[in-house]
Amino acid sequence: MSETHDLPTMLPHYAADNSRMAWIGREIWDHLWPWSRRGFGRHRFLLALSGGAATAVAVVWLLAAAGRIGPSVVIGWWVGWSVFEVLVRMESKPYIKEGPWWGRHYRRANLMDMICYVSFKNLLLGALLFLALHAVGVLDFLQRLPALDWLYR
Image (cartoon, rainbow, N blue to C red):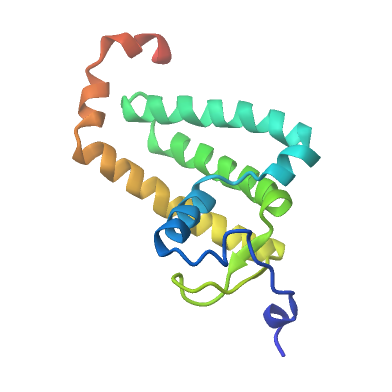
């Protein structure tokens, strides 16, 4: 038996929800929000660090959207955020889905599982975010916005 199958099954609280739309909504939230109530209650230091990290990432995204910093800086911040998210998820939501994405079979994640999950998820989210911002013209708008001068001077 492989190491993967030796890990215990673990269900998030919403996994048994019979409503398909509610389950899909909770799945989306679970992927976008790495914290849980249990994690908030147990690790105040990680919570405080989360606020600072989220603010820094938001500033980097704004600067990148305005075309004021290079892609290597954005990639560096995104990798840094991913490392931080792995730590948060291992404490707050230490499970991953096993099998197809539409399935409901979850198990406890080991560190490598979580690194792979967060890395791939954040790669997809980052690409999707930039494509969406470009498609609706936000990137062009932000590049010409003089009110953002304070961010890059």
